[in-house]
Image (cartoon, rainbow, N blue to C red; front, side, top):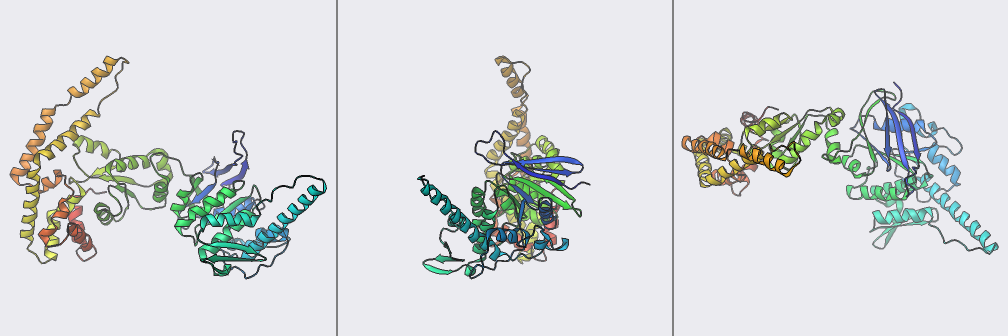
Length: 549
């Protein structure tokens, strides 16, 4: 099998007026040539152990002179004073691990050490900064002197590398100042000055990364392994946004397992590393752009190895917490509401996306006022429906009420009767509004069956609408649902009541029946019991009425 990366090149397109670089990566994947282009940079992302660092090292080996690879294994030992040598020697030491050679084995060691060797080159990095600045100043001095001698206008003083580094620093750490003195770096905060070696880990790694990226020549490929190390999330994106702005003439390739950081590289092409099969062999996929799937969510799902279940709610809501317990073998993702659950489940099961993640993706929504036709239609897309109107009704299941009552040393029969009476009383009190909602939902669903007419005239549109409306028997819908509701009430069918009654607050409002203070205490108490020896009996009660996914 040929190596996945056969070329890594950059070129200017004629259309680009801003003189930005178009980058292209060409690799072989399953015998097919794939070209990945980006007007921005690249992100290589994947789970731990997927071979991301080996891939970065492989790219460097293909282009040893054009690639500066910043290792994840980097020491942050800032010297008190920098031993400065000439720029060429400093750059060679930084790039190749020796002042006069071009063999990267001097820097990385043998094959076994290539991705794990600790690189301690902070002094070399700062030496290159100071020597680069010396060359800049020397060039400006000579150029200005020649112009003066020839009665020419002297150019304005350009920014030096340390000026650019300071500008980046000030954007990332506005409360702290950095100063480049003769052969040393100092920082200050609140008027107190201290040596750079006493800076925080985040500050020291930021200075290191800024230095290396600005030192890299125009057109250089910079591979940054784990760009998030030691950086707080609040400054991580800001640091790299600013570095990218100062390095538009270079190609940055980030290697990360931090999904939030990967998603923050908005203009980057994202390469998903699924697996590493040994020397120079990876399963790679270009992460596709999809309007229905946010990139952060795409990465979150891809980074998971379990079957995926999209559910309603948020990460702090009762449904999410309950679903995590019931479907503990799945990666449960809260998607806010049923519409998003449906959209995301369909999107991830789209053939184009499914070929990338190869995961079992399902959705689970509340029954609400859905008709059986709607439920059957959603089931074709892997979307199941609860056997109660809303997830909150699961807390009101009779077996669950008994478990909680027994645990609290209360009379189970008395508690169950009180809860049932309370729920029926509430339902009877809003019977007409519940009936209206149920009928309205079914009418709305049938209106969705409107089909575009074959003709193009106004009357064709009117006729098609008249046909659709004429097929909706409102009387039958109303009478059928009313009869069903009346039957539930007359037979005192509690399980069927939970099946049709939509009122989210019910589970919280029964707290006082259990003698629990506060409106949400009962659901909270059930969730706490899941961490006790009652866990299995609670889960059994829930699973008896929940879809088997």
